Length: 413
Image 1 (cartoon, helix red, strand yellow):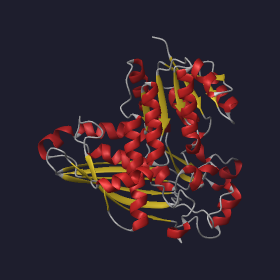
Image 2: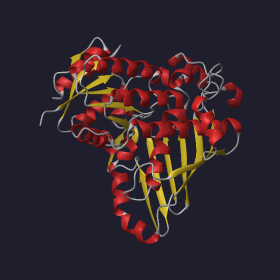
Image 3: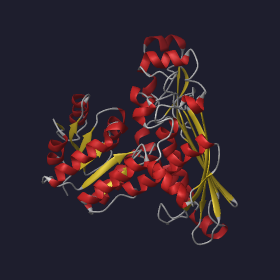
Image 4: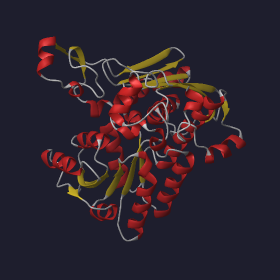
């Protein structure tokens, strides 16, 4: 079987993380890259790590002609334009076996729906990349507890958190380009994985029906000095003018379609977690059983004293978004595998070779976008949003949050 040639649009942080994961996946290679910056570095990584001869392409059309699969790892604000170019390339004769879109699918429901329509129109199988659903620890927990679910009843409460000290790239901090703040950036992860954890084992990922959303957002750190000035100097984004939330929390109620039993998904996310680095926390509670995942519990610990720390600063070699390079450090030996990136690539490889969508397709990504936007709407209004109300569903189709419009000061200050 020939390797699938994956072409990356974008060569930033997530593209490099995915390329690292690809070194652990058989039957895939990095066939090309199109990016306004960083393309040479990503191509060099591919060549040095036996991922194939990565071709640096000058256009989306060239990338589509040269590769089997195109992966959108570019910033949120250019997604729609890029997918339109991909659609043009397919109509022009490019034969693609698959399309990948990194979360979130869209910054608004309207944008996400347009991407789904474009993918459907050109008939190319697709995968929505939400890595946390593919984490081995999550999958193994649910498989281990499948007999308990069958006898005692399904998981009733899922809690998920993703927290770190803030994104790498300036555009992530700009709500008008990113589509919001931490809720848009990381809330989509926690909402998706909680929905998955609550779903009875073996059922489709959208089996449970969303009923309501209650959410709260706040600007707790990056909106006050001296942090606002630090952010302005580092990224050029001024949170005194166009702020975004750095903290969010909320609860989503789902309903079992066969039993009407309600279950709850709690999510919490922040860009103000000044501890070891990125922390993923998930747990699921059922009648008489439970599981818990904490990514900062590592089998490997490293200690670096003050004198040794002065010699070299290499915090992120230990852990994504790490904020310290001395003291007792939690070190994850294989973050790409721990966070589910390897398994989501394997799922995409198998799906595209069989001519079908991945476990999570773009229509699923649209549903996650809708839940995130409903959470913003709830936070703006300070009330529970009834997702069974047709009027709410219609409103979400054209809704754009105050945060995304650059008017976050109206609710955050």
